[in-house]
Length: 418
Image 1 (tube, rainbow, N blue to C red):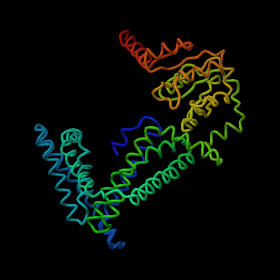
Image 2 (cartoon, helix red, strand yellow):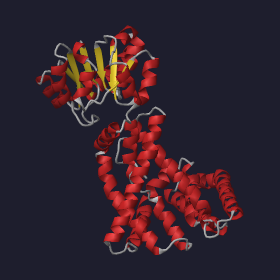
Image 3 (cartoon, one colour):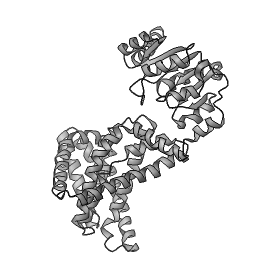
Image 4 (tube, rainbow, N blue to C red):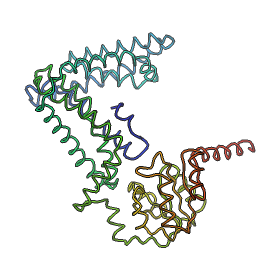
């Protein structure tokens, strides 16, 4: 999960939603592992007994870690090596208890790790155990690799079908759900692309299933091949998740499914009450700007139009008195339909590093044609880009470093005069 999470920006709505779904998915996988040994004869009594034993093991592990392990850590705290050995011994003990209770050793290892994570020593243990973890993870994947059959057209074709099924089902479940709850269709599509990888927990569950003789080696090899294909495909789907989302949205618009806010804008005739200050993008710097206006210049609210493609921020903005309009800045037609030609000031608050499918320089080129009488204030990643924007006609261009420096100056002046 961590390897996948590192590939995308977790400060965005889609990134946070992806992390949340991954955690939820892994929690269900852990719960499944509790009663997996009984799947060969799935009787309600046996399954409930396994779940009960798992709950007892969790409670016992946390109680013992709270009242016994905490004292051991306190005694061993001055010796980092002893802390590491204590942690490993505790995990082995929980693994043994899980096996005695009829659960899997993997389940016991997870419970042992969770009980250690509750201590302040957890971070130190993670840093020291990293080498050991990587060694055993390497052996685990070597063992899995030895089970991959010689690729044939039949196996590759079936694996491609499985990967396509995973991606399509996640599109259907995640994207439609986020649209229904008001978080936006695009957010759901980007999240679905981020979730296109088959979880590594599936390999653990398959390995356990093969050990319990629940499945045969052919099925295990097929799913392993599917995961390898999904891992390769997901790398590019995550990298180009915005383009994937835009392409799927174009197909969905053709069948009449679009963002709810797009329908609202269409019904409203794109009338925004003569608002002459246009804020393009409301992320990070844009959020701070909106907050400052709300606190210090509320009279400007009736003049401001916020354009963003994230419907999740709409309710909060409108509650504070701002007017929000759906708009994808990557498409010049968006600005044209929003009638920004009468704007007196246009501010793009999103730097190029977060813009998808466009750049401040491209936006400036479009604004010079759409709103020739406006004052254009753009955002750049560095001083060199800011100078290039000014040379291209921007009235001003700010960088994140300038904004942070100005704030530091204000704080320094306030501290020195106190």
